[in-house]
Image 1: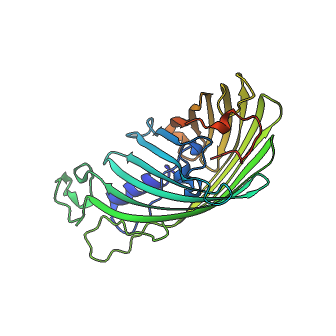
Image 2 (image 1 turned 30 degrees about the horizontal axis):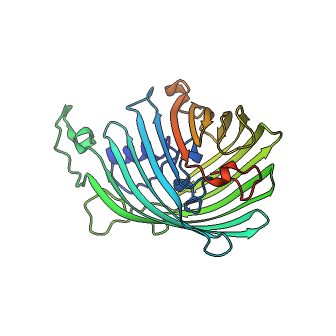
Image 3 (image 1 turned 90 degrees about the vertical axis):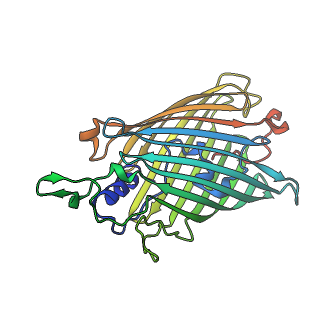
Amino acid sequence: MKNTISRASLVAALALSFQCANAQDIHFTQFSASPLIVNPAFTGSGTGVWRAAAVYRDQWRSVTSPFKTYAVSVDAPIVNDLTHDDNLAAGIQFYNDRAGDANLSNLSALASVAYHKFVGQGAALSVGFQGGYTQKSFDLTKLYFGNEFQGGTFNPGTSGQNLNNKVNYFTFNAGIAWAHAPSQNFSYTIGLGANNINQPKESFEKKTHSDVGLGMRYTAQLGIEANLSETFSIRPAFLYQTQTTAVEMVAGNEFHLIVGNPEFRNFTTAVFLGGYWRSNDAIMVNAGVEFKGMRVGVSYDYNTSSLKTASNGNGGFEISLIYNAPSALDFARRLVYPCARF
C-alpha cells in the first residue's frame, strides 16, 4: 500500500528487532493500470475482447536504494451470453516489488474470476474472487544488528537473530462492483473489495507458530466518465484503501481529449492529462496518449509528507501500458454497456 509506510517500515523491523511487524500491500499512482490488484470484480471489465496491462514504478531514488515495483496482467471474458449477455471472466496478475538495501522482495502471482450480470438499462453487477501465491525474501547479509557491534567493533555474522530469509504463503481476495451508463455521455463505476481475507502468516522468524499475519486490506473505488462534448470528457476518480494502521485516499480528475474520429470513442486517438492528491503523502500528475486500443501513460509523485525534507519532494515515477483488443462494440457509436473505468 503506502510505500512510505509499508516497505520502509518492514525493512526497519527486519533490521532492528524482528518482532511483530504488519506489512502492507503495494500500490500504484496509475491504479487503473492494475485493475486486478485494486478489485478482483474488475476482472474482464475492459472494453475489448481481452485486456493486457503493465505498469512500472520507481520510488525514493533520491533517499535510498530505489523501491522498484512492476506488475503485468491479462484478463478477458471466457464464457459469453450465459444469460441475457451475462459473462464469466478470468484473469492472471503478476507483480514484483523490491525495496531497500536488503532487497526486500515481494513476488506474487494471482488468478481471478468474475461474474458480470447485466441487468438492463446500461447497468451491470459484478462479483469477483481471487487467489494467489506470494514469496517474500531479503538478503540477510546486507542487514546490520545491534548485537553485532561489540566493544566498539563491528563483528558481522555474530547476531543471535534466528531468521529465515524467505517466506511463502497463499492469499484470498474478493470484491463487488456496480457499473451504470444511464446515457451515452455519462457512466460510473463503484467497487468494494476485501483482500488478504485469510490473513496469511508472513513472519521471517524461525518459529513453528508465528503471530505475524498480513492484515486485511479493504478498498472502495469510484470512477466517472462524463462526456462534455463529442471530443472532450472529464474522468474523476476516487480510491480509498485501509490496511492495519495505514490509510490511503486518492482523489483527482483526468481530462480526456479525442483528436481522432469521435465516432469510435474506445478506439480513436486521444490525449489525456490528470492531477491527483494522495492524503498525507503526495501530489501526482499523469499524462499520455491513446490510439488503436492502446493507452500509454506516465505519472510522477511530488512528495508532500514529512519525508519531503530528505527526498527534496522527489517521489515516484511510473509508466504504464494498457491494451484492449478491439471488438465490434468499439465501432458502434451507441453506448451499449457501461464504460470500464478501472
